[in-house]
Image: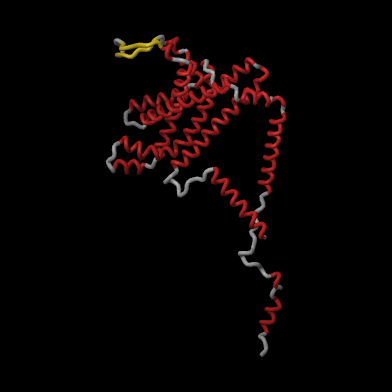
Length: 326
């Protein structure tokens, strides 16, 4: 029986077996080439290598003196004072910011006006001016008293005896921090969906319970990253307390630099590295606080750095196996 004419033509036109197209599963997808990205990466790596090389080989930095000063007792004493001032100011500043934010959101026009005026004034005045003003406060008011306005005083006390250098530094930073924290807290509260307020009110819950258990925990998702920025700025602002005679980390480095003028650069590097360490620790704490308050707001929690490292190593091993199989 003869084959149809079309069949012979089809067999003749068919490509050889070695030129047959591969199944889709066996085909390899080539990534799109991006030369601009590679060029930018190479430029950044070259600049980073030059920076590190200059930082390590330039004798002007005196890294041997840096190692000598880094853990000296006087430097560590200044570091402790920096931590104390920053911790006290952060707690008092946040507490004051919450009060000011609630006052601005209050229905009382007096509370709103007073809160707005305080925030406007403290955000307008430089921090160094606030610190110097408080440091010389005893020159304006020798004694402070509590009593009836325009009437007799119940008791009074000498301001100069109570306002030590530490107290002046903490009060000055706290007053300044409260003004900025108030806007951060107010923005976080306003970011909570209005339906949450209405649902809490519909349940007949007390106002204090609505705020502490429903509104504020949700607002913390927005407050945390913004306030941590403020906290990092507060840690760096503690360097200004040197001007009110409090020897913090930066003040100690400055005083040691005056005594040992040849070690000014190593001492500045010491204070710089310690500030980097402090802000890095705060950033790590920020990550875990944000991750904690992200529960219920996202489908899956953001991975921790250790989890990211494990995932990266697993992906790298899988990629190497695929390359070897091809």
